[in-house]
Length: 56
Image (cartoon, rainbow, N blue to C red; front, side):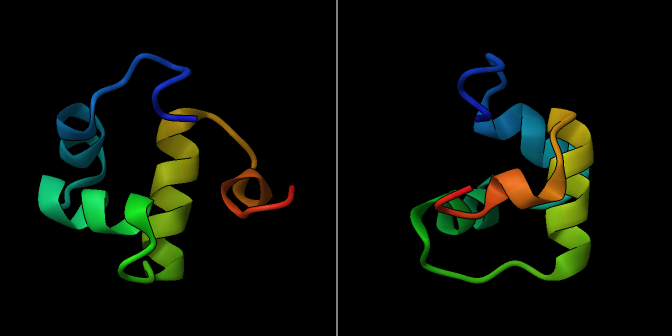
């Protein structure tokens, strides 16, 4: 969804105030983000929170 909105990992990481490496690990499923981080990602991408989960 980030790529569909033409936002780089670096830019999204900056917007939500986390390291780009952490965002990469989240996107790859290597770490589980906190609910607060998910809410920040959702807000930054202007999408409903549930859309961040697979199968929705």
